[in-house]
Image (tube, rainbow over all chains, first blue to last red; front, side, top):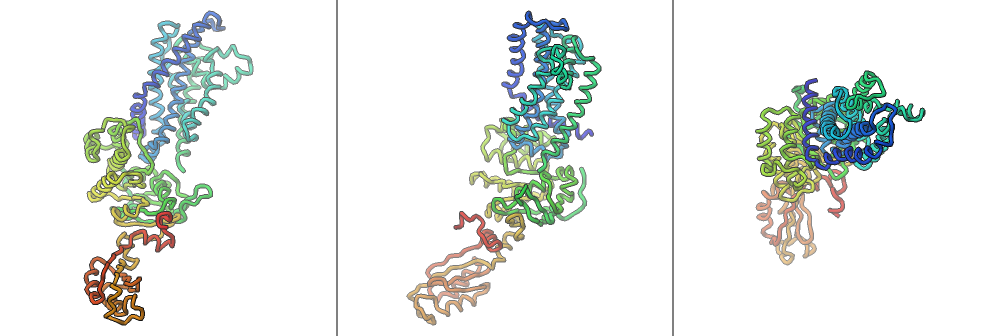
Length: 251
Length: 331
């Protein structure tokens, strides 16, 4: 078992070596939620009244943070495509490294990226929105959970798909509905009944709700339920990603 | 570190088959490579070389047959096999965003090498990349990349080093550098090298033992010298002065006289003599050594020109398969 962790650490280091130089990525990931909050949030803040009584600006800001965390996870699957295109994937596959270590290393690297992004963004958003961190542990669980689920989804897609273009297309096709149905832009309870059912079936809804509880103290779902669901889902998705990678990388 | 069951063979392949859909890549391949050999798998494009390497390095599943590498079964003991391997792939396998040093550092970590920093530094030195160690691979030339890939493949002193077409696409100087490096590596001992190539020259220059494959089957195997020798020896073409009919015996004054044929046959090592234009065609073992004696015996017939043709693996391939190695080149 300790072998797996040493190898995971090596894969993690490699991912960090790679993305720390990618300045455009960091600028984009940081700028997008800030721009969205500034342009949409301020405009709608006085127009929208939430049934929870909370400020719309805080609702949108926390939603955007969840979106960035999800996109950070999807980026983890993208690295699999990049590794296949550069040929580096074969080096990982012939090394005495278990598939679990490859998945764990990529997941850990993305969790670190998500935490750094959220940390920086919360610091900035706290200045001009109600975002704070009343329940940091809940926020931590939400960030880790959302990241792991999206990296796992990304690895499954990245194993099945061969090109960066098709990955971007399919990943967007799969994730955009998940985002829209997760309560990022409006509380799930305001949706029509049919759509609301879909939202409750969407795992991201619980992550977004838990993140909002952690950063605003506002929630629609009991915290215990969200935590339990995310923990179970995280384990299941990670295991599934390992299985998919193992099966999908042997001709 | 798991220790393999003792075996004198680094690689044992029996009846290996592999198909991709309808395409048959390997049709019952048999191979045995003794530990410590510099082994060459030679074949034209599409013969099944890369498929063989993929299966031997655990990247592809064997379709049928048994395959043991370092004594372990590649289908069931993948992780144990992997621990004993170094691989240099035919296609590029570097992350363009990482530096040369980072590539080797990661490799050292994957194989749990002690004294990582020192060994990585020495490896960079050995392949002449010490000066470029901290630049991203993005800016490297083809030759530099290949050298880095080889340095990575041997960093952990693998029991078996696989090289799939290691000099494909390299310029002459880079190719020579790679050859030198591989020779030095093998001379240091302890490593079995399994190289695939479609270059006859590469196989003859580097490999102690060669298997020629075609259409997913092994055609013939042996040392390059032996394979060539089994064809019967070198061919010497001798032109005789056609005006000089003094030694007599020929019906046609433009042809070599019977006495000349007899004289050539009397030389040691000569296996066959026939007329060739106005001269002779002599098949002889160890042609360069026998040539003086041959010329001596033919002195009365006035030899005006000599050509020695050494058959190479190209002729071996043609002899065993009945078709040329690269048809477009030999046409």
